[in-house]
Image 1 (cartoon, helix red, strand yellow):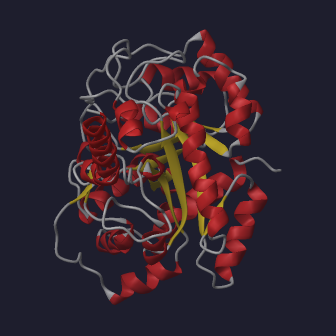
Image 2: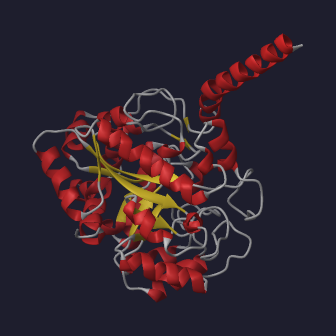
Length: 389
């Protein structure tokens, strides 16, 4: 009997270990997809121009997944080797801490089953992350810092303006170091405590999305049930974030939250990954009038790469959405917001970012404006908004 029990327990241990090795890859291979395609068109002119650019992207959820970012993977969209191959100088990595099972862009409950809890268990994250959104954020930040510590010549975490200038100097000198900025997708990770803003700041977070796919204590989500505005706690949180020179991201916030934040502060704001409703009508995109208001306050809008954001998920479709944005709010307010590794299907991974440069040339966008939207605007925005020390 005892021997049989040992065999059963040993089998369970082996099955659990096998699942931990196999299940994360199986999950990601069904969520972070790339459209099957022949190599996208690439003129010699586009290749030369792309290699001269400082390319920067506002949104990737890569820290959510069980991969070593220093190793080139055949899963997902982003790792350091692929960022370097795509000539991406700065990548914002956003920590996801909660997302409803069966999420959609129309309406999600804040009380439903959480997909990130299931993912944390499947990927064998530390027990402290199983029940705490705050700990999930810290765990993802630690992963990024550990990666940079193992290969500082390949990856540098950017937390202030001087570090960004250092990165740009290194790249100008011929190094291919990638700069990483930490963001968080939804301030529900505060778990209702304002003092945790200091902790997230100390962990390196500099961009804070107020909402994700559901309403939270700060206010309504674009995909929540209430469509409500900024709450009293939300106003306190906004004030605390601004006091620390942390950047506010409204990518998933309800339109009323966007209006309320615009009325509450005159600081430049982000919409890190989205599309323009006038170009691609749908529940993922906010109105053109609000996009104009964000831009008028010095804000920056990251154009997404997936269907719900731009309707046509191809390099030409990305270029068309960027052109629409340039005409709507001006080239100085447009950036890239891929949503790589965000459980979306994109036309390419980080290696083929030059396909956007080619498509923008073909769409008649000037070289100076291509330099802006491919990264120049985001670099300038960070140099003006990151902490000075």
